[in-house]
Length: 281
Length: 242
Image 1 (cartoon, each protein chain N blue to C red):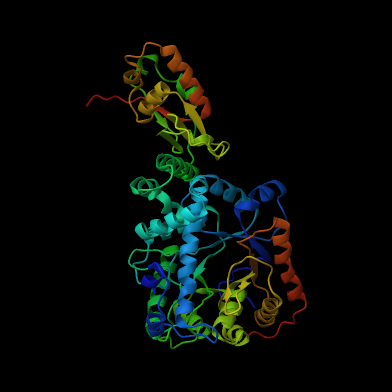
Image 2 (cartoon, one colour):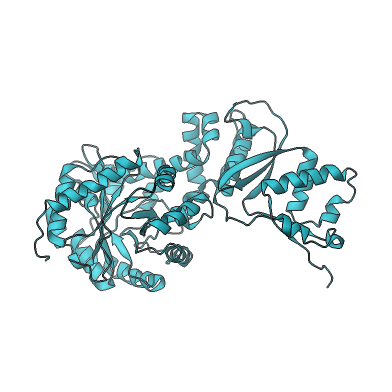
């Protein structure tokens, strides 16, 4: 099922990482698409941007940020958005995504994807900010469900219903991180299948897959390993329900060689080909 | 929540219990501690990535202590971590009891400069055609403009050699740190060459810089070398008359 904006299923992509620059520039591997971390390219005029320009000439590229802080109560940072918009135009980014989270208040930044309380008030707040940001960027913002390690007493919504309502009210897209669903479900005792089943399929523009680190009492979203089987099974469920959606593998710690990362991304093909598509809800 | 994350020391469970739900396996305090621990680790890692030689000099334990102090005194106020370490040399200079304090400051200044040069905007290079186009009568008032990715450093230690040959021996050192073909590199200068290049880089007219210099052939040789290295992006001849 296509998303409501007609954003294409780009196939199976990987995150562009510095350690792979020489391989990509020299070998031009057959990769469907790349996702870049926006902030790594917004404030540099050096080699990263030089490499990105070359990558963007050959491959579709999507921008994925970690610093928009859409849930913060600080004013929207238009200087940040101006640079983001300029970068998106420069490389013809297919879409621009970030996270449903906040990264700091009172002018400080903790450089983490902090969880939001899910309340009526926070819903109104974040919907208004997404509208402002989408207007500025002149494109629908795409927001990812975060991995979280705590829940607030004040929350009155569960995360999946909050995201669905937010996406509808703000008319934004969703980046469904299947590993994050698994991680948060473990950490909070949620039903991961119910989460997947409640996300509005026509809003999902992209899928994330990644490995994680199990600490016994909780799981950390470290992007440091292969995708575990239960996450692949969730991915199969997403495919059965929503059809083919641009799928990206993230690997950010202990990053192996490019071929290993790419091979992990291509495993997703198997779960698609073995998954029977049901009518989207 | 942010206040708890930024506070040094573990979070008390009583405070956490007011805002955070427990999980089946963790108390509210333990759950908040996940975020607090990641904050310190992430920023310390970012500092170590930008200051690897300083981290090596101080050693793991002392660098971790310094990073913790630094993050308390200079918490990030930017969406980018590129700027995080800009006050590292200044804080090092204020601290008592550091081993090799002057070398620490010099290493930090050098590594901070390398980071700045790495991220600067790319500039065009001054060409021989542009130089040839300058009217000989105008050379005296002409000014050279350095590329954006260019910095000059005056140091007490040869820190540009530290990675290959870690040494704590002091030696006056003058460096041009710049970017060529998207790679950061540096050029060792003599004290007189540093003096001339500093004035040119600050935009003084060439005539004023050369005034009083007897051995102009030496300066021209320097200039040829500097221009081959790509230090300059333009030569500007503008009337100063009002």
